[in-house]
Amino acid sequence: RRHGLDALAVIRLFKLGIHCFSVCSIVGVLILAPVNYTSAGPSGTKRPNSMEIFTVSNVPKGSDRLWVHFSCLCFISFYVVYLLHKEYKEMSHKRIERLKYHRKRPDQFTILVQGIPVCADHGIYGCNVDHFFSKHYQTYQSYQILHDNGNIESLQKLASSLEKQIERKRDTRRCNFWQWIWFKFTSGPIDARSQEQKLKEVHHSIRILQCKNMLKQKELPVAFVSFKSRLEAAQAAETQQHVNPLSLVTRYAPEPTETIWSNLAIPFYRLAAYKLGVFIAAFLLTVFFTIPVTAVQGIVQFEKIEKWFPPARAVQLMLVAET
Image 1 (cartoon, rainbow, N blue to C red):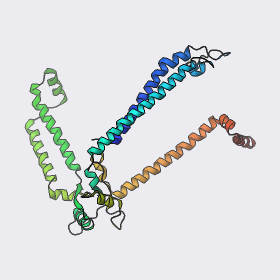
Image 2 (image 1 turned 90 degrees about the vertical axis):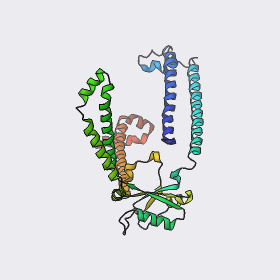
Image 3 (image 1 turned 120 degrees about the horizontal axis):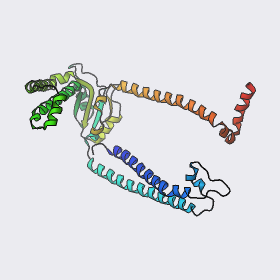
Image 4 (image 1 turned 60 degrees about the vertical axis):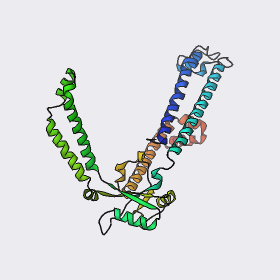
């Protein structure tokens, strides 16, 4: 419910892989490796000294020990099928529970609007959002403008650290001798009254930043717009709202647990540039990594390539002719 079904599916996927490979490792080490090691080896050949004595190549043809390999393969196959059936059943049950729990999610009635132009009369973003959507959509309900609360977050962290320091100062009388020694060496002398006064000043600064006039100055061109109908919310998210494609850009609102609030403050055109840059960097990295690796592997495995692909001999003949 908190982190979404996709995160749970990824975790269960890793868990499934660990179960499969652990059972395969146990079967291979405790059953197959001793069976292969104690075999006499192929008839007419010397017993190898390498790690091949632990593989199936050390078992002679027609030996009854091959049935052990066949039985282990059948056991592992049935075990993997059982695990897949069990995981599918549990994930289906989780999915049904999630659909029941999120039957009427707020994010299904909400869209995210970016690139909001500033109102010419009031100089804020909220007026344009309210005027536009109340005029063009009958089921429009409300909007919520986002604000840049970076200063408030830093002040809240400072307030929490001051509260912890004050609590530690008050708890020194109830701690034992070693804790008291550790506290004396790790923290300097703290005046509780000055810290409390500083904490009051921080809380006062937070209240000042949270007032309406200050919030208007920190508005971002991003807003959540809510509708009374999921149909109109979907229509608003899928259609272009403005002649300028970079103004009033709408998309589906993300789930609250999957929202990265710091990314919402980034302008929409900059996000598109970031995505393009990441795509180009990944493409160049793939190209410049694949070509040298392919060339080196081709040189190392040239004999095998020449065996499976005879026209490759022309490259060798061309090099000989040039030399």
